[in-house]
Amino acid sequence: MNKTVRALGATPIQLTAGEMFDSLSRGTVDGALWYYHSTPTFGLEDVLNNAVEGVELGGGTLLYTISTTAWDRLSPKDQEIFATAAADAQTALCEWLDTEESRVRDNLAANHDWQISTPPAEEMEQWQALINDVTVSWAKEIDDNGQAGTQVLQAFRDSAE
Image 1: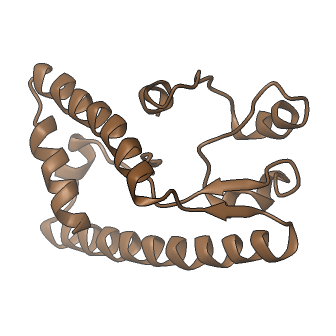
Image 2 (image 1 turned 180 degrees about the horizontal axis):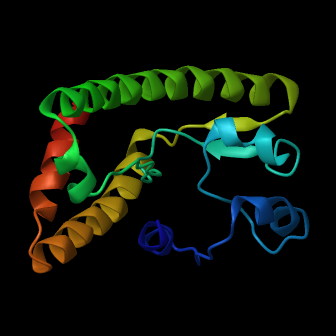
């Protein structure tokens, strides 16, 4: 995210979500890469009032993990149960996020005078070119560390089509 913000000509700073309201209301921060559904949770609906959609700026990650040692102690049946439950939870979370993002977005536009825009095609190409450099650079860093960064990036892009 920091590299993306820099590529777009801004200066990134890292804050906790709980610090965002004060930072925005005092003018310390001018904007944020933010999910719609988190806006009311932190009371930001009236300190933010514009959103840009359609640009692939990245996203957050939510991981639940188990150590290899603990996993290996599970029976094959229990491993299968966990794997199935994980896949089901992933699908349910993605569906919930899609629904919740739309619901909160529509509420912000209707009840809080948010101006939500999508850049015109020629601007979108400029945004994507800048961001593409960030993603390619990220993949190379991962590759240079002996992992499959380029492969992961391609799999992500393939899944989005």
